Length: 434
Ligand SMILES: Cc1cc2nc3c(=O)[nH]c(=O)nc-3n(C[C@H](O)[C@H](O)[C@H](O)COP(=O)(O)OP(=O)(O)OC[C@H]3O[C@@H](n4cnc5c(N)ncnc54)[C@H](O)[C@@H]3O)c2cc1C
Image (cartoon, rainbow, N blue to C red):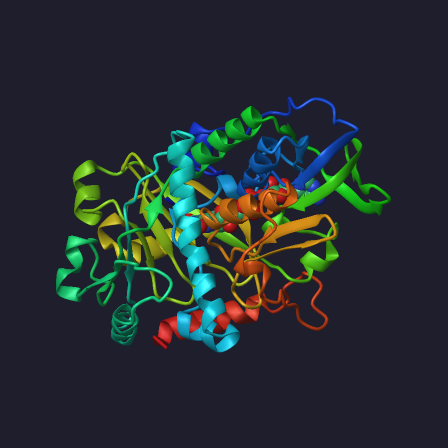
């Protein structure tokens, strides 16, 4: 069934599944004020968490977004929450030395704690749960590597991770495709659309003004701070926070040269009978695997559908084209789903970096946090809060991610010409199991 229009259900939408329950807000935001203490550019998790901090500190805060608030990754993601730091401790130690490596790992744990605490304190109804992650090994060698890593105690914090050998795998997941895997019991999940909608309410209650459909076209320094020129007029601000992540453009060329925009693609399936879901997903864990071109998936919060994401094409493509390819991979993992169809297919643009770490910083009143490398559900809010507190003068320390160099490469201007060849190499390595 995969590979043709037959694989789309009659209810198919080329839009995020999450938007069914949490539709994008219409433009009811009104006129742009002429001044503000802080202008935040981007109304995703980074920008809104920053705005909560500045508004609660009593600063007049205006958040602008080129599209609807949450149009970017913050309402498109898989809702999987990890500690977000990709490089291992040994890689980090080699690069930055022991102390900074430990600080970086601790920031990862702090980001997981931050989203957990925030959702609970603000009572955001977003189907949040500490469900744990099963990370499958796609080769026997990868299983051994995971087991070795599991034995080395993480010096930043206790992960609680444990191995699941292949003969016990069905307790976690109804597939034979993996050679066992590792469970990270503290990883969590939520509904990203509901989380973003709740966060918008919190930001507004804190006093922030949100102006949607208002692209910033120019940013200039002035004697008193910044002149911010937008499609809805000009606003003067003492401080500006850049929260544009994968959608960072020529407005901020320094940041644009440091992030690599990459499309990430997801499908939702039509509803699946409860007994099939219970057999294939006996736990409610979020799932991923050891391939370089990682696939990430999970049951929907109501356990009626599977949400399945990954990178399926060399170049960016249309969700109608990525959908059948993702479905083919889903069926490879779970052959009994061969007749299942796609109800939603969508994409968003994430920001990778040359060191696969996130970054934040400040330059004379201009703050930024970005580069979450596809793992920003917890981290974007955490770093957004940090830059917000710094901009408000509450806590000037931006933490470990401000102390590492934010690298670019010669001649790189923000267009990743190397993406297609890199994806092709990763795909080949995954197929060969190396
Ligand atoms: C398909 C997909 C699946 C993902 N799955 C996961 C997951 O399971 N777990 C996880 O941890 N992470 C995941 N991520 C990544 C995560 O969603 C992001 O890291 C996070 O949402 C980034 O939030 P943000 O606020 O920094 O950026 P965004 O939410 O992308 O917001 C940036 C905003 O900036 C605005 N903007 C840009 N330029 C301008 C301008 N000039 N003027 C005004 N506004 C502007 C954009 O319109 C956009 O709304 C996924 C991402 C995608 C796309």
